[in-house]
Image 1 (cartoon, one colour):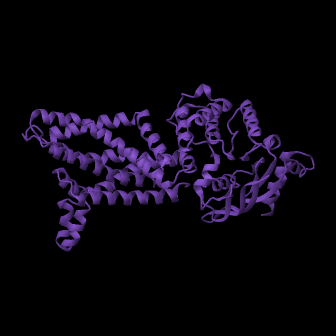
Image 2: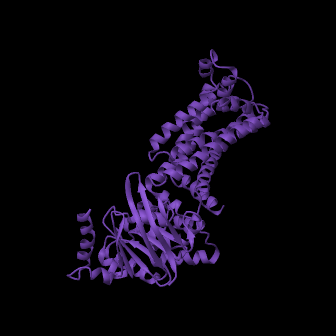
Image 3: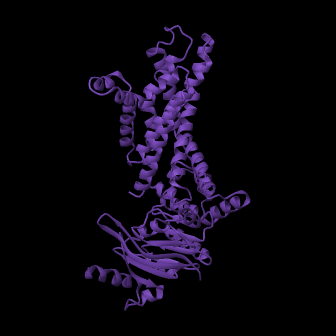
Length: 245
Length: 244
C-alpha cells in the first residue's frame, strides 16, 4: 500500500483562532478514510489545505509525492475534490458544467466521451443533464459536485460531506460508489453520519478543536465504547476532550 | 494555457446564457444613440465624422463597465465557486486573465454592434474611416482600462453593489484627473511637472489623442501599464482573499 497523502504536523490559524493544530496522518491507496468531528472541528479546513485551496500556517502536505505548496498544480491534477456545499456555476447546465470540467482537466477525444458517459451513468444525473444547476434540488447539486470530482478518474478523492442532503436511497448509492472506487484510490470523506464510517470506511480519524484525537479502524473506534456503539464511542472521545480543556 | 482557454470560453458563454448580455448590449446601443444625436449634436454639426459618438464613451463606460465587472470575482467568492475554481489545475494568474479577457471580448462585441453608426456616417458623407477605426481601437483599449480596475475591485468584496460603487468612484477619478476643475486645484501651487503627471493619469487625456485618429505609442503604453498593474493587484487580492 503506497502512501497517497502524507500530512506532517499540519497547523492552520486564522488570526488568534487555531483551526487545525499539529495534525499528522497518512492515507494509502486502497484506503477510505472517514474524517469525523463535531462542527467547527477543522475537518473542512484540513481538506482545504490538502487540496491546495488554503495554505497551511505550518506543516506539510504531500500528495502523490508532490508538495502542495511547491507544486500546487500537480497536486490539483491528481486530486478530485468535492468542496463543502458542492459549489458550482449555477447558470450552467449540468452538461455544460461537466464539459467545462473536462476541458480544464484536459480530457480529450474518446477518453473524454467515455468518461463523461460513465460518470453521468454512475452518478445517475442523466435526467437533469440539460437543466441549469441552480434549478436542481440539493441532492442533485451534490451529485453534480461528485460527478465533477470523479470525472478525470483521479487517484485521490477528497469529498467533504458527500452524502449531506441526499435521501436514504441516494446515500446508499453514493456509499456503493465510494466502495467501488476504493480499491485503487485513496479516498478521504468527511461526515457527520457515524454509521457511514462503519459502512464504507477502512479507517477513521476524529478531530476536535483542531486536534487529532483518534486514528484507527472502525472496529477499534467501536471498541472505545463499553456498549459497542459507535455514537457512544464518538461522544466519549470528543466530549472528554471538551471537559479536559 | 489550457486552463486559461477553458475559463475564457466558460466565462464568455456565461454572459449569453443569462439576460445580462442582452440587457447590457441593448442599453449600451440605446445610450450611445442618445448621446450621439442629442448631446453630441451629430446632425447639427454637419460634419461627417464620429467624434460626437466617441466623445461620450468615457462617460458611458464609467457606469456600464463596472456593471459588467462587478460580478467577476465577487460572485465567485459569494457563491463559493471560487473554491472549485482554485482547486482545479489552473493558476490564479491564468484565471484572472481569462475572466478579464472574456469580459473584454464581451465589451468588444457590444462595441462592434454600434456599426450602424459607422454605416450612417458613411451614407451621409465621406468620413475618414482610418480615424474612425483608430477611434474604435482607442475606445476598446480604454474600456480595457476601466475593466481592469473593475475586475480588481470586484475581488475585494463579496457584494456586487459595493464592487460597482467603488469601481465607479475609482474610474471617475481616472477620468477626472485630466479635467480643468481638478487641475486648477493644483495649478496655483504645484509645479508644472506634478500637474502634468496628474493630467497624464487621465483616461480623457489619452483618449482625446486617440480619438483624433492618432494612435500614439505613449497612449498604448499608458493603457497597457495601467491594465497590467490592476490585473497584478487583482491576482494578489484573489490570492489573499479567496478563502475569506
